[in-house]
Image (cartoon, rainbow, N blue to C red; front, side, top):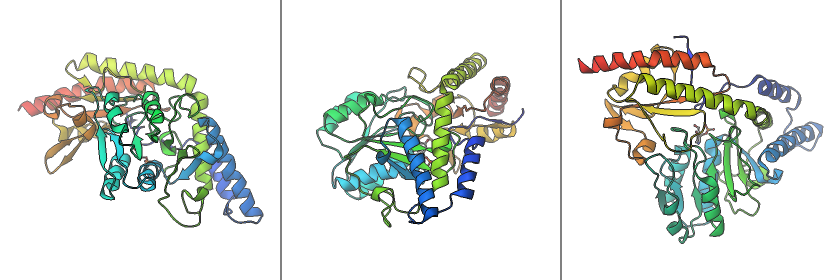
Length: 382
Ligand SMILES: Cc1ncc(COP(=O)(O)O)c(C=O)c1O
């Protein structure tokens, strides 16, 4: 099979327009935005322009955008920043968060913030009813992701944010797999306080992200120094990176009306094609609302350790939902939280589609994977 990249949820190629905009900034606006001379003033103006453009895409005010060095840092700032600001108060997050949130919540627990984990349904959607009793604890933050990165389920963010807001509790959403691709605004009935985004999932540069911090949200900075980013994130700003994020987001949002249905059609083609050829395959989160660019399937009877190398040899770049260590397979924390028994459902693989994905690529996968699975099953039966 022709090499096929279907791992856009891991990262995406830098878009040409983004690269060109960033190169211009690097060449012509190299000044330090904190310097008071002409070079500094020009860099500051470029940085603030990028901030204003990003803010307007979100419906935020520019002062509510903190640029960070990536999505992980934005998640850390949201969760740990809140835990430290509300000393001793609990942290609540879902069982299927990315490790950028889960590991931060565990680190906050070591600093004295009791951790409460929200369960999810069999289809990978957070149980809303589990939140209400926890709100009485007045947690420092409730953190639930917008789109799950492993199985693509869309979480009930407006409902969760409204419950938190009514209880006066800060709500954070990691929107790293959603921003740009799904309509997300902070001024249209979603009363969340914190929102994380990352540039490299939408054709922007790696190591660049942002945290929306609603005005009035008390947050302790994690990185101390010269008081940059209104004291929320010290360190000389990455002006080119900020421009790259703003341009990448503008391009995605501009094209979304065309791109979203195109991706949804490709996803359907992939899902239906695979279901037809591999009847015992199961789609993780099948009954839940799912983003039209992430498909996770489990393949019973297939050796999980052989699966990814075999796919790679066929030229297919996807992700696995299971991690192998010393001969044993540890199922993903997401599938475990959903109660998907790995020994029955088999290893899972994640296909994630992007702007560059074509129908021909999807057809190649549908033509190749079933034969590969058959071969692997025959080998396992020997
Ligand atoms: C849901 C989610 N949160 C956080 C991250 C981390 O973002 P970054 O790679 O920008 O640090 C990722 C990236 O894999 C993600 O998918």
